[in-house]
Length: 125
Length: 108
View 1 (cartoon, rainbow over the protein chains, first blue to last red):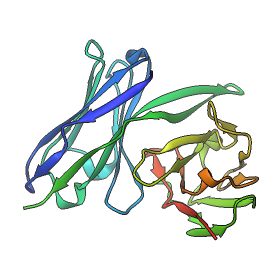
View 2 (view 1 turned 90 degrees about the horizontal axis):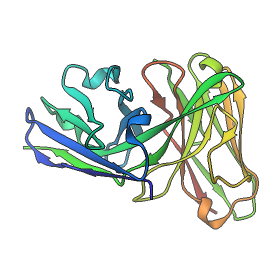
View 3 (view 1 turned 180 degrees about the vertical axis):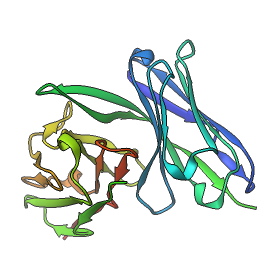
View 4 (view 1 turned 45 degrees about the horizontal axis):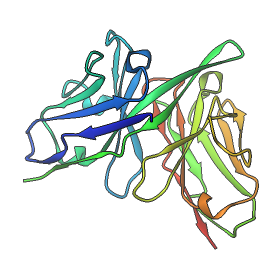
């Protein structure tokens, strides 16, 4: 079964740090770009970061640049999100997601086709 | 940054009815690089459509997507009880990737 399982969420004080993990199984993890997406309580979805298959390319939403680092360990089939200088506005459920790439009429299209169940991060004093 | 605006915010319909959800982009979305997701309460999102009109694996054919440029539409031809949920559009044609604010489809 294709599966993603997040862990590492919890309550942290403003300015603190946290590392989220996402364990992948049931597919060849090293074949796919991966994403982190978050959802603040009662709000919509916000893309956070992407990482290429070999970790050589990383992209972030502006609000987390310089504070969050996405990384992966293909030998461990794991994705990570290192979160530093946390703020109250980072409070959210964090999902990891697999990015699937499909070629349509010669153009690459993407979708996040497998998601974890999410891990909750609460930033509060 | 491409801002996606979804309309309406809430759609109240009965099972069997047709649902039409709109997503407008603040600038043209490169090569129709737009996806649609469904999210039910307490669950992770589910990919429905990519490339504006291609259904993801296992998605019923009552779901269809259309559009290009700045105007996109998700249509559910006949609502089933399990289709009542929140739907998000998302563009991946420009950085950063962005989502719309969502449309809730509720039972009338």
